[in-house]
Amino acid sequence: MKILITGGAGFIGSNFVRYMLENHDYEIVVLDKLTYAGRMENLQDVMDRITFIEGDICNREDVEKAGNCDVIFNFAAETHVDRSIIDAGIFVKTDVVGTYNLLEYARRYDVERYIQISTDEVYGSIEKGSFKEDDILDPSSPYSASKAGADLLTVAYYKTYGLPILITRSSNNFGPCQHPEKLIPILILNALQDKPLPIYGDGLNVRDWIYVLDNCEAIDLVFREGKIGEIYNIGAGNERTNIEVANIILKELHKPNSLIKLVKDRPGHDKRYSLNCEKIKKLGWKPKYQFENALRETIAWYKENEW
Ligand SMILES: NC(=O)c1ccc[n+]([C@@H]2O[C@H](COP(=O)([O-])OP(=O)(O)OC[C@H]3O[C@@H](n4cnc5c(N)ncnc54)[C@H](O)[C@@H]3O)[C@@H](O)[C@H]2O)c1
Image (tube, rainbow, N blue to C red; front, side, top):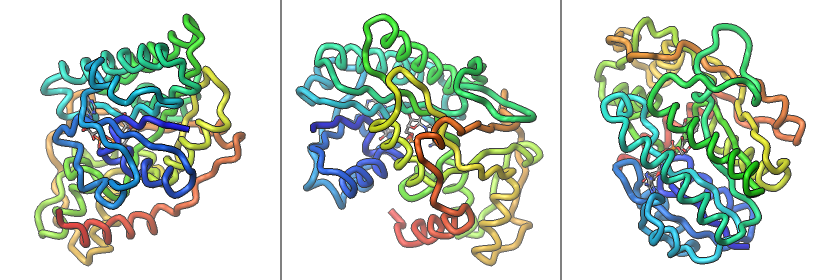
């Protein structure tokens, strides 16, 4: 079986490439534009076991270079909320138009599965309780709105053309190879250098953290066992305020809490994300990694991989 992984040089994509190589015997093609977020270093240990194409999911000719693939995992996206607030255009282009281009490619090649990698941010914020897969989408940022657009288009290709799609919506990931602009890497890297740890607003925004390898395992399970046309939430139940996460990192690195610096809040900042994950649990998935231990391993990874 030949599988195409777009965005495979990014954070989750590169961990997923490694996970699939370790657990299956598929031919893997990675297509990645190598934006500021994609790095060849993320794939350096597996380059001799994959085919790598530098290309843009928005460009039909680039996607055609992958040839006839049986399965597509679309991880490629612009992903940073703060950047989407400054300039939404590239988010609409990559996340919506790029997804459209891949869905068309999937139709042309009559793929067995098309898996769209989405996010809990499409549901928006929730004060109490947790979102289920059929709750309405209420995104707050240009990033999450673009991802929501891609989800709706993906479902439409199932309803209209019978394309065998699946969608995963995971909560916030952390682990090796995450770009230093994201919350946990910033906190770790700044703490290591005794620089202030910037936290938005009052620091009480809640995210449900999942270790990236738990997400990879869940995505693989959805691909193999999920029901065609369905959406699966993926969360590990590790709800923490941003301040709590910063405090754990500081404690682990033996640094003072006084390094925490509250900064002006992000516009439209969602207060809390929370997912109901009963559906994927029924497929037999549960998270394996304990939050504090996985965070400790992530800190060690950033210490060892200065690049
Ligand atoms: N990181 C998270 O916490 C999280 C949570 C839920 C869902 N997601 C989703 O998972 C996916 C991967 O997220 P990530 O954190 O690994 O992102 P990332 O920003 O680390 O990586 C994105 C990758 O996509 C590539 N890319 C960007 N535009 C492209 C284009 N036009 N054509 C081809 N490649 C392109 C980049 O070069 C990069 O390698 C995204 O779809 C994101 O929305 C991420």
